Image (cartoon, rainbow, N blue to C red; front, side):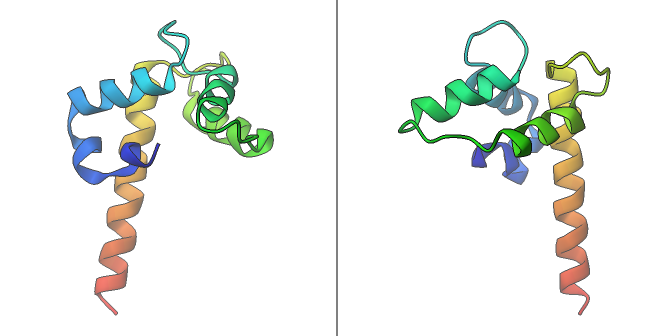
Length: 94
């Protein structure tokens, strides 16, 4: 998941598609809470913080259908990039 936040990945649509496919664990073309749970279970069985992931999903789920499609994922990653760049700029001006 950390690859999703890397600026170079966020700027490249092909890389975003790869990140989306990794998170879409069942391959149905959407990211859901079940996908997050499967992803966490595949990395040592760690239990995910349900509230955290529900909040992230709701933030990215612009049409309110309970799942995140690629367009919504791409938009959410763009927002992360903009927030990251804004923080870096603010930090460098101090």
